[in-house]
Image (cartoon, rainbow over all chains, first blue to last red; front, side, top):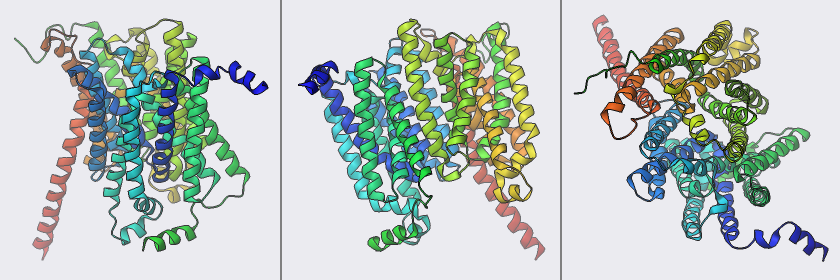
Length: 293
Length: 298
């Protein structure tokens, strides 16, 4: 009885009905994908490409809007172009400078597209900061499909991603080309981005790909456990954020970043309180190599 | 009849302001940017513009000077990145990402509050993209003073910054506190990007910070010459971009022309790509020269 009263007080009946169902579904898919893909973003230290691809991709939506095609096509073309451009140019230049240049070039194109169309302005906010409470039923299926494809790609690349991130020398000895793996991984990030940007926004997907996985790595040294924790933290972050956003009407991006930062700080506190250990003990690397060979 | 310089370019007051601010920003960004590129801190340099934007939107909401907001946000962000772990190379980008993520969340909140409570439309676009043609001339003195302060700060820590950027061991042997130097540099970079993002928008801020320096370090080997080459590239691209943007009002009569940021960024990107080509040509030439001299010696 008492729990029922609390439920009604919190607006539980409305929170899980109608358009809110879409928000919960889309949020859950995005959290799982971000938790998994983000784990490797953090492991490989590729936070900058993970920021550049979604942010630059939104310019693609502006371009598609200008020539009157589906924004998803623009997002897809731009995020894939960003992934290939960063991967390709990084072979001959400094990766971080190349990423910065690719990002500003896409944003500048976005600014040019926006200057030519007049009715676009309000959509900038939602593409950057997300409009998860306004997700339509037709958006769920593409998000789900691309989410499954991204996770499938990560599963296929799993061993190679781990080996090139943790023990690059050993990966080279086994004939893995780190730059090809890098480009393949950036394409996965681009796929995870394309569908999630119109749903949750470019800034939010980045926050989800960094905060929860970085927090998870503070709590455990085991790869599988950290991956599971990363997904769990991302889920809790998104669910709490949707609930808070529903209650307060504030943007969901604010709550996502607030909760994932809280997880990260808790992780750092946990690690500081425990005796310091090396993040990847040598035994786990040799075990990985053994299972590979 | 189109000419290279459309009529009225040199007579227009907004163009004068744009040319001055463009040159000042380009030079400060080039000096700070060469170190950002050498130290592989492009991500921090870009993230600081977004963090500064958060400060700007917060100031917008609170009704205080946006310039103070931009710079305050940037300096707090630089301190936070250092605290989370910017000094360790392995965790540096993640630390930057965490700070950037939380700043973005705050920016979302501030912009939401701005647009819903004070009914100011266009705040998002103004803060993100800025416009070099709509700068208030009264901000020029402040921009110039803060630019000089940044340049002096970099000049004061030039040697230790250079040494700690290239070799942590050497810096330690010389008794340089690399962390303090790194923090001073981050704060200088925060002031610089805060300034440039309020003047020219956050896109151009990152473009001027990273583009010309990344191009110049491919062309020359000495840091001093890299700073000079980067400044020249920055100023030339900024001025050409302003000229093209002004002319573009005449190219496409039906619309309002193309934004300055588009032209400047496109020129900077082009410079970077071309420098890659010439680097290839130069290295081939160098190989030929060295082989030629060795064969001449024997």
